[in-house]
Image (cartoon, rainbow, N blue to C red):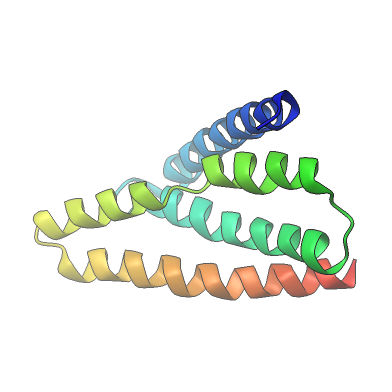
Length: 126
């Protein structure tokens, strides 16, 4: 892999990590920590962003390979937190909150998919 790709990954990854930290923190300050709302919002908004980017790269050909690495792999890869989703759901399950655990998993997957499709459709209209 060439140096430009590494730089794009580093920049995108750093930006995605910072954006995840800021957004999740803001959501937790607003909604509290009784349910992993921060991770849910990060994951579904990441799916929405990724849907737009996929449409802009694969259907509209607006974004080239460097932008794809920067935004899709770097930013979205660091921004979304699927592993945290699983960890927090498992914590809910271990604490006897079965309904909350499965609500978190299903809401993340279903809403994430729906917002991915909406983002993709919006991206096609750009």
